[in-house]
Length: 115
Image 1 (cartoon, rainbow, N blue to C red):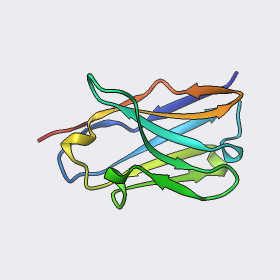
Image 2: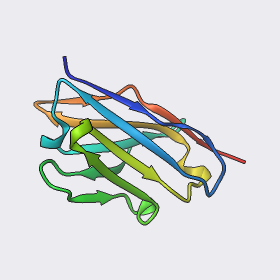
Image 3: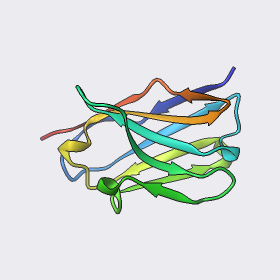
Image 4: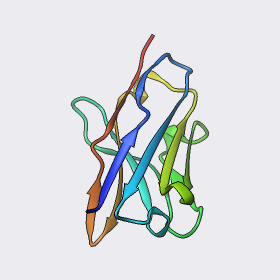
């Protein structure tokens, strides 16, 4: 059974850091492009970052460039989202996904940036 499990969210002050983890089960994440999305209350899902399958090519939404870094650890079948210099507007539920005939989503992890 294919499954994605996110973790690492929490409450952090503005300017702080968090590292989100997306673990894959039943799928080799090294072979697929993995994306992070987020959804703030009352807003649509929005793309945050992507890492290509089989390479380390990445891209980001403009508002997180220079602050967020997506990476993968193939040995752990895991994709990370390192988030630095967090702002209140980064508050959202963060999800990872990939597409392989279907789109697979994790359950999400809450990130709250507040003083």
